Amino acid sequence: MRLGFDFRSLRRLVRLNLGLMLYGFGLALIVEAQIGLPPWDVFAKGISIQLGTSYGVASVIVSALVLLAWIPLKVKPGIGSILNAILIGVWSDVFIPMLPDWNNYALELVAFLFGMVIVAAATGLYITSYLGSGPRDGLMIGTQKLLGWPLWRIRTMYEVLVLAIGWLMGGQVREGTLIFAV
Image (cartoon, rainbow, N blue to C red; front, top):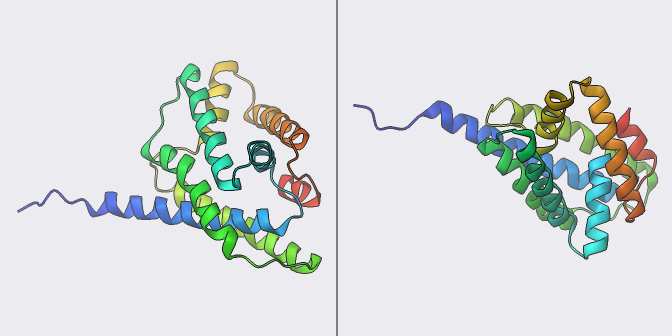
């Protein structure tokens, strides 16, 4: 007798959600290290400063805007795309208040690097759930299909643009931004 319960799908959902939670934690470490942010996060931080919101809320706003940009690109989101857009920002806001104020550059650097490792591992977790690409990845792929340019060029174009706009809005660009880019 089949109960209609699919353990494979449940495992994929657990993998997705665990990846998004860990990504939010890694991002919280990066944000709170205060030695610079990755380009899209400079943009989100700039929005949070301008709107007076938390970093996580601004991250959700950025993701929602990026998902809206999928419409003319004819990119279809999966449940993972939607959950990514919402939960990374939510989890970041959960973890940020729990983190200490390091006030020591060596500890900030360690927190930043540890955050990067966690973000990388978390990305592998949520991507391998195969429930949809993240908002920014879908934007890059959709633009690549539309323009036919190499993906590296499209990624560079978007990241330079959001980095510049985020920096102009007050987002933090420092050595961590360069470390993340490399």
